[in-house]
Image (cartoon, rainbow, N blue to C red):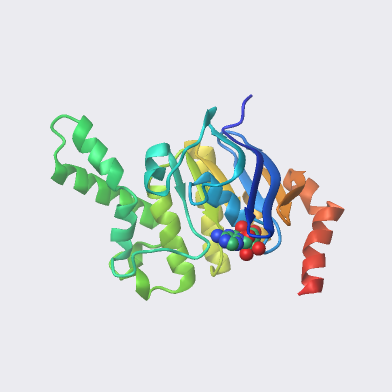
Length: 254
Ligand code: ADP
Ligand code: MG
């Protein structure tokens, strides 16, 4: 079976720094695939290359069998949505409005292609769907607050809700559990499982919270200094000596 997302020999330099060095990774359709590694390993850079935020890289990225030419403002159109390690919300808009922003291109498509489906109906429909996503991410009671008023963890949840509401085929999540409490992490675990298992969404998950990674990931790829050092199922990766070494080694230096 060909991979849904295939990253082949991806390399990128920033000045003297080789941030990614012939990095390859195959993500199966409908899988939750975690990408882990110490700080500075290159995880967010992988996301930036996939989603068009870094354009000058060597190597190839295939999405559903075709070269991916995602541009940041055309992500949803390409069937992709991502979240950011450092959240990037519209702080002066409400939580609901931020989620609706992720859906605008879908609303426009409804209006264009569904006869008799006017703008008002499309908006009502979008709001109903946004509310459903807010419910599932535990954000319903923050619906009408300004996004900028929430703490970091809840802003990360809004970013997640925005990405999920776009109903991408491929969802890229950069540290969604940062700043969340245990109960909220469990809710995220449940949501991701449901998106992948229930709706067939493919998810690539960058995450430091191992409780989350180990409980949802089908497969884990480990990056260190821009290179892949391990890959496998959670139980294989957890006991891999080079993985343990990569994490402990870094802490030692720090
Ligand atoms: P991770 O997400 O695994 O913590 P990153 O992908 O953010 O790591 O960064 C990998 C390395 O590349 C780091 O050393 C970081 O400082 C560097 N880096 C990332 N993006 C840029 C950039 N746009 N310009 C220069 N250096 C960058
Ligand atoms: Mg990062």
